[in-house]
Amino acid sequence: MKPQRIAFVLVMGMLTLSARVYSQTEKSAKNTPESVNAFLGRWDLTLEASDREYPSWLELRQESGQLKARMVSRWGNARALPKVDLSNGRLTFVSPKEEEERPDDMVFEGTLIGKRLSGTTTGPDGTPWQWTGQRAPALNRERAPKWGTPISLFNGKDLAGWRMKGPGTRVWKVENGNLLSPGNGPELIHDAKFEDFKLHVEFNCGANSNSGIYLRGRYEVQVETDSLEEPPSHHMGGVYGFLAASPELPRKPGEWQSFDITLVGRWITVVQNGQTIIDKQEIPGITGGALDSHEELPGPIYLQGSEKGLVAYRSIIITPAKQ
Image 1 (cartoon, rainbow, N blue to C red):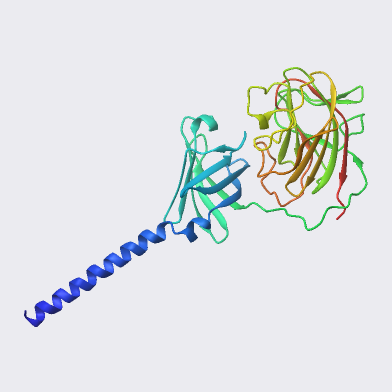
Image 2 (image 1 turned 90 degrees about the vertical axis):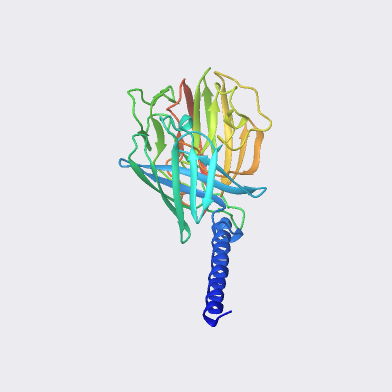
């Protein structure tokens, strides 16, 4: 074989080998265990619409080598997503149109930049939205809290210390020392913000009615008599979408009842009418309807008024942890 021919064959062989090595490297870089692991876990999301920000939440995990996702969108509960994909460092996940109340699916695309997720989606009218995500904090506490002085959040006379948020002509009011929800009206949010606390609340939930107590403005403990056909975490005393009451006590429409709730970091205990129904369980993420997704920050107590029916509250006493 002529020297020129030999040289040509050698060069072509080296180029072919390099192409194969590059191809294999590219394929392995698409979804190496390291690249996938960087995305796994819980993420607090913020969706940036033109008029406001929407809090959201995402959990990514692997099952039998397959990427799975669970999401809390702008409202509602945590739910599994039908599609999630990670390719070449680009994350795509889809929230179905039926859940988003829009004519098309809500498609999220994003990448990991440093320690934050960042990407785009579209609003119901097709306008582009930006979204960001930061890792949800563990909220572990090194020691048990020491409790401070109890504070009454409701004076039994008026709405001092509270503000209403949301549309509607129906409003919260005070009658005979009781705080009355309007039904299909605004939410009622207290001005003060708290981190870890014990909360005592007395409530009277009418027949076929629904409300809820949001802790730090992010995690809802259900107050309801209308959700029997829904999942257990939607029932009375559950942390909506995540934790079910166990045991689940009989509903008592029209009767006064009580919750004693302890929240330390992510760990919650709920005692209903003197019986423990949730015992030091971890809350994975925010509830749809949360005021924000900044789980690392203190937040207010807020009472849900946007659902149907009539619910009354009276004694609302919080005992914050000492700083």
